[in-house]
Image (cartoon, rainbow, N blue to C red; front, side, top):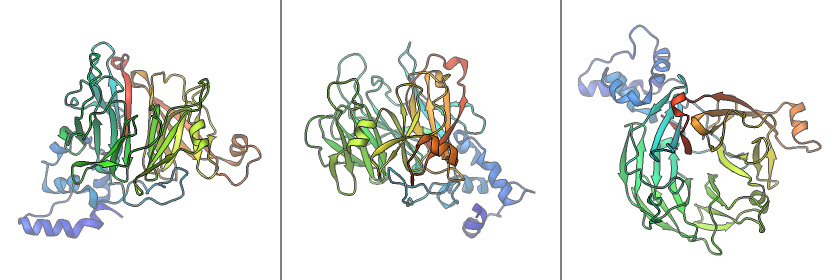
Length: 399
């Protein structure tokens, strides 16, 4: 269903109220074709494009009234449950936060999925937190990214409460409500449309973007959990200390359930097999293993184990340090897409699909009744001038 078929009456009503003549999006082109043309406009310039005509303004502004570009994704950590809500009629842009190792300045770039050009975004307000000390959380359906807290640069170890939010619709940053408690090196993620942050000490709080305020969440009891990695899926925030080998003790892990406002211990198989950076794509949890060939693994909730995804590891031209991100929805055909952003903003784009019988048998010999997957990689090289940039976070927004 097209935007025009869904909203033509709304457009007519709006035109009648304003006393305007209703114009075609692009004169001489069918509405469906014109809509697809406008989808290729870089979101950074939407504010300018809205001035072309009242019809363009309505089309680019009324995104929630448009149909889905991607179908809803499953939401459980092992998939299988249809997601509520929808993703607007937008395109997935990869946002990468990176530090210049010389100037130590943080910058944010967005990768256009059509031109494959990086677009420089306005600087993050403040931007003085030490690398890796702040949290970055994307709310894909709202087209927003939150940069939260951190520790001041310069060795003071002073944590801050500040929060900045980027809006893709406005292509700009503004200050959001500060956290209740100064935090640095925290775990964070989107859970049920809200931002959850949790410190190593177990204290946690939740930000409601609609209300614009923070509220306390249930504290996690027990020993401190040092953040190695964190991921949000299925209404829960998963926090892990990392993997066991070669350390002397097994890593700890915790899970926050937003609906119950409670914490529990992470399942043993998930905790001990979490051997890399996690990305959630189409509702499923994947990790890029830190060892060997950087192979991709998917978490199987029913078996409490990480299963190898068939195909090769991340292409070797994508170098450390790296960060990962996934598209919240499934791509047409039931595929899932994962991004690995390496040094110099070289990007490996992984498309995950159901494996053919031969590949499935090779990935899991002797195992029946389990859906196996295969990944295919494509590399998008970063510009030469990005050679020194070191990524610290990546998010996917629909813009």
